[in-house]
Image 1 (cartoon, rainbow, N blue to C red):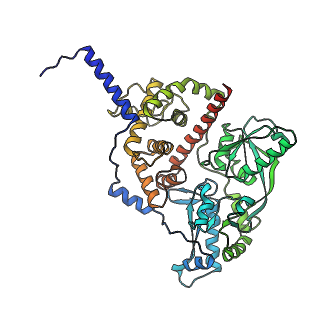
Image 2: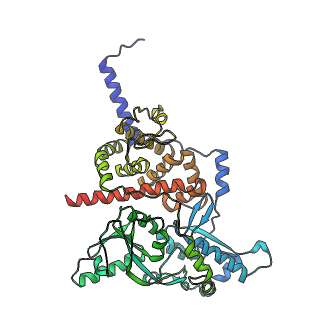
Image 3: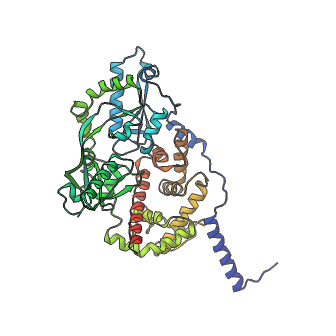
Length: 494
């Protein structure tokens, strides 16, 4: 039967298809999970880390097991994975402990030598998991504080009299004394000792009739080196870190201002946390610290080793020039993010990471525009958007739609929060959906949470493909945090 199509019919069909496209983006269908192939499963299995049951004994029990488990935050300073290779200050110190135990606590059989096992753990979970028995030591640049001593014990310190110093953004005004911090905006993690000390200083300012410090709680997913990176780029005005951390990163982050003369706290101690009522372990670790603390050959070698880092430098997404681009494109991102169910600032942060929001950007492999898509990807029937090389609007629409397709097909999991789904979609955008499946499978098999990116799936990503995807997602998140701060400040002014 022949049907005569009128202009009205065609218009109605176009409207219906547009509505259906938007509806599917906002209410994705229940798609079956995409399973790993046999080859992918075998590849993941080779990388799986052992998962041990919780255990809370003292050193005698560890001697029987010939095992000490170290909980450590995932950090470019203290512990990171890159294609299966472990490195960082805490890793080297832990391997030093392993060698020391095998020398001082030898066993006749080589197969029964001591092992130190590293368990990457989110920083705000270090103490709870230590007390639960997930690990035997919590490490990672921990400062001894009265608040922490209520829950855990500490080893003898590896370093003493560590000053906590201010680091400010390029172009910040000169600061000469503590009182100059009155009214200054400073960003640190609320779980850190820095926050505790800044609060006390701010209170003393108020008692003197001075303006309190404008203390901002940093996102807990950001480590000290991340905050330094953002300060160096001008995304944050200032932060506080231990002096040795600032010195480690100074060769890479050359624009930030390190204020050695302003010490907020000058007698901090760097030590490992252990469970209370562990006298045997504490005694053994006291002997270890004597030959491995700062001032010894081993301790001094670590202090000088970690002075460079290969991760890409973050750029200033909130400079005057970049904010002009932001204002020019925010409406486009808002419109397409709304259509495809994303936070527009997340997509803008991705656009900045990809091209610095530059539609003229071209990559050697042929990716074009703001979202750095390949034209063939945009022309695929699943995306079906042309002109991405000429129009920023079309480019951003295609990037947003492609992100939606990745999320719906590979991350259709009700256990995922919106933020984690988006972060993992970024990972798929960068490394490919096949690799994302491996990341999550490896995380789950290694006892990590496959539904949380930071501190969990990102560790698996570093094992499978190396640092590139971890840094890609991490940089986007930092730009996102910076954009949120800008919008919050703009809203406060209205």
